[in-house]
Length: 321
Length: 253
Image 1 (tube, rainbow over the protein chains, first blue to last red):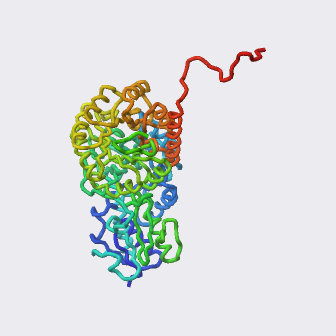
Image 2 (cartoon, rainbow over the protein chains, first blue to last red):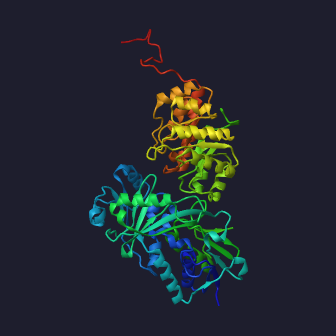
């Protein structure tokens, strides 16, 4: 017998199930497509746990909560603690200075050749030593396995909160159709470039086409991600591919020889302030609005939902209507 | 304030809506800026940006859709038609980009698109250079407002060719003109209004500032200072000093 029903098995729903289970509740988890896969935007994420870098644009609450994400994930999946690098091409040096002014937790990477030998030809970089990254698809399947070990299985079924008795967590993302929720389109490319070795995520600052590259096992690299005020879920645009690939090429010309394994596009749910929320509406808790911070902020969102339900604690992401 | 296709604007500041950290910051920046017009692009959103456009509409200011990102007259005309349908306005800020690196307007494509859109009932705000010949041709083609650039888009350089802009202003005294693009600081906006331009349009300077809301307020004060100065009939500049206190009869030892 379950204590609460969670609808949606993306990164928000899965993290909520895990946090509730650890808090001693028995959640029931339902998703219209079953286990996580290409149907959900969690599938297309980069997997950077980079709260300090995000702080260049994001509000302080993201930087604060994001710092605890890596330890949450390390309980269930492999997290690589090697920091992240931020680079600018020589002609965009001022972008790097500006990024440094607007972020904390970094130092000048004057040892770039030692950190990432393949990037030694770049002259200026910042090193964010406390940041981490993970492989999102592996993290999802590891989290599903961890839940199964705790007796929580994903049921396939299409339901809405009003059709279910008792307390509900609605973690359906865009499908939840909350009034202030909007879609922000993101596009990505996966390359195989066995010649190139990177051990940590790299961001390339560019005034028009900023890019990040996250290394994955097997010589794979995830290139992301555009950010468009659009809920268009169609495939990646030619323009996005051009921009992402040319930025990668500028970072390391050997990317020109890479094999294009995959392109993807999806829509991230976001609120007006781009900060996720636990919105309490009677017996229904909406966990939504993770924007581009799914893996970074889902642990905090899930923990606050669990604290609210089990101990009545109202965290700073909780909104009671 | 001058008339922009039958609309008298209460404030000479026009703001773009791209590149803000979040829509919430965008909204707060607009409130602080007092801007009377919001420009909005729709080329890349492919008609699926409704949620964001609703946020822009809720700002309660005039909407000026643009054709940003269009590289040909044809592309710009299609985008303008889509904009008219989506935003229910005849206003269109016409951008036809001629060069990918400098983003400078393509004067030939611009003229072609202005002719076609004006004939189709659009109120065209052409984004142009300070070229007087082109300005005359755009007016002949049906434009009633001109938007000369201050400097290349996103460069923040201010008024790059003061002489060119001054002569353009002087040549078409009765045409409402908006300095568009290249403004980086409130002093640039004040400068444009002091020179007699009717309004300024900017985006990056506010959206990409460390504190967009603070910078929006700074631009609000900048345009206010510029407007007050223009209306107060500024003194002439001169090459020689002119003491503000007469020296005749003053003890000089």
